[in-house]
Image (cartoon, rainbow, N blue to C red; front, side, top):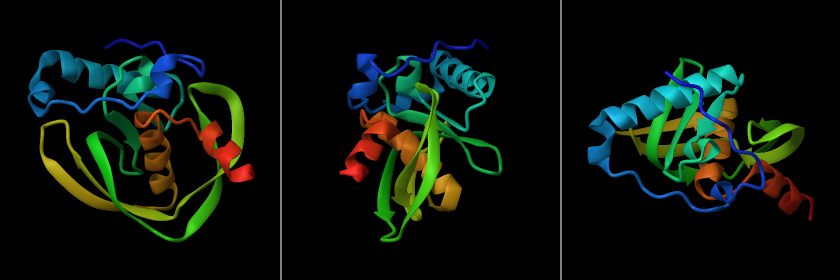
Length: 153
């Protein structure tokens, strides 16, 4: 396993919508190693989530700490979001040293593929839902600081 370089705000990869992952890629040794390296990088940086664009790869993959251990989600989609919003403090490995309060949906329904290509659907609430939304923003070319600016308007 290797620790990958985490790109920071200003890198163009963080500002573009990431590409879907071809499901057949999931079984390749290269993709499996990439996921292992992402996880190693997240832990080395004391993160609770990391998205592929943060390590320079513009693909729709992220890893998030679920409370029951890390979960890797490939091509995730939010199928439903709660009306209730909660404000909570966030930081980001790509915006080091900064923290701010961000409004996020209290709960949401998620569909994605697992690392072995299995389709899953689940509901996330509270802090885990916040982490998923933060990581999904990375896949859409957004940083939490963008949300903060938008919400302060």
